[in-house]
Image (cartoon, rainbow, N blue to C red; front, top):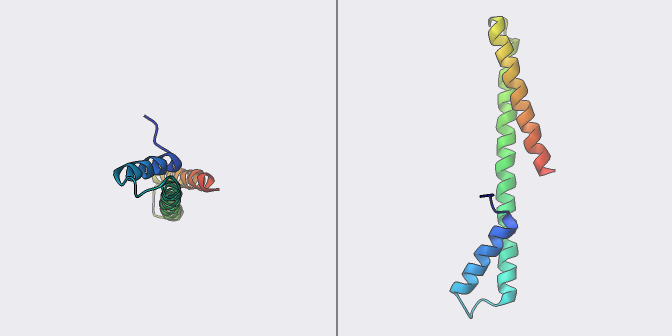
Amino acid sequence: MEPLSPEVLATVVAAEVAEAYQPAITEAIRDDLAARIETVLRRMARQERDACIALCRQRHAMWESTEGRSTISEPLRQESRSRANEAAVIADALADITR
């Protein structure tokens, strides 16, 4: 099953609330509620992506620092480089979603 988009999820939640509180919730209120829920869901998703991007960038810096140490062996240096590159790629991919 595919995950629901914020718009679809918000619409479903607003419809369920409207049904539970009929006739107090009009169609206009239901639509407004759906729009507000969607806004909150999108904001939460954006904040979570931003936090993930920040974590990936921290990991990238950590692995780059590890790679630069003169005290590590060449196999570990290569592993550090790979992990740094992987963290950078993931951060870039997540950042592309938010553009």
